Length: 65
View 1 (tube, helix red, strand yellow):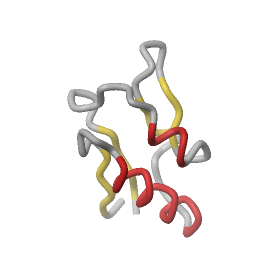
View 2 (cartoon, helix red, strand yellow):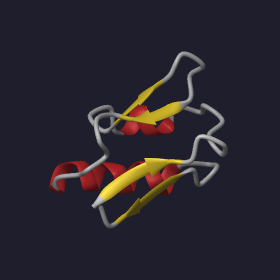
View 3 (tube, helix red, strand yellow):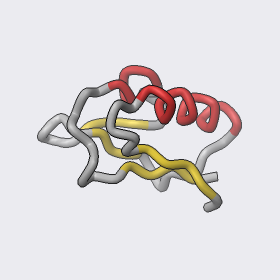
View 4 (cartoon, one colour):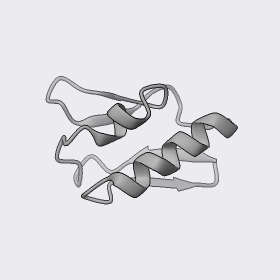
């Protein structure tokens, strides 16, 4: 599984990197970004799903890598 953030939708609320700092970081504007290549292990998938469920803009998506 792989996680991505739609940069056009992200408004920088920071929930993703607050909930899953091993998966997400932030750029110079404070918008979320995926760390590494976005491919998730079991722990990362659980954290990414938590962040996806809490993103107010629904900017996070998880799919097949």
